[in-house]
Image (cartoon, rainbow, N blue to C red; front, side, top):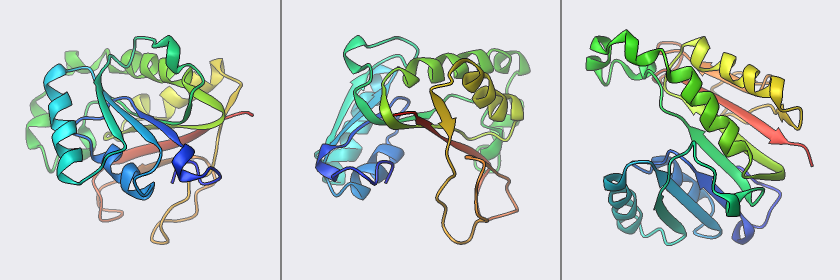
Length: 199
């Protein structure tokens, strides 16, 4: 779990770009149904998808809410033990599942890094001192991955990268960032990083 040092019933987790809800569902199961998970999406019609998925799985500790991940919610500031920011991206890491991605207009991707950094900046405000911020994408482009984390850390010295705890099939991680390349492992292309807020 993201917050192994806390009793599960006390954990508050925010999944800011949640739909269709898979990450929230996995977290809820790992937490044994305890704690509180807030699953958000900017699109109103996707809230029902999250709610229906949680109900189907019998997960009662998930609350779905429409929320723009770039817009500040003052009552959440420094209230979350963990925040997951799986941000909108070019999606190039999952091109074998969604081959239509190759026909995306490049112009539409130029603004993604600015949006990704804005989301990461905003979501970081919700992390408690000592809490965890997960930044991830389903692309392998450095400008949407490592460059975003570096730009964030250059402005936020109260956060630092923390090594990732991974299944044994993966090599030991000490950098706190990992890019999964299709073909290296039995995965699609993903990026994940783990940032800890100083206590």
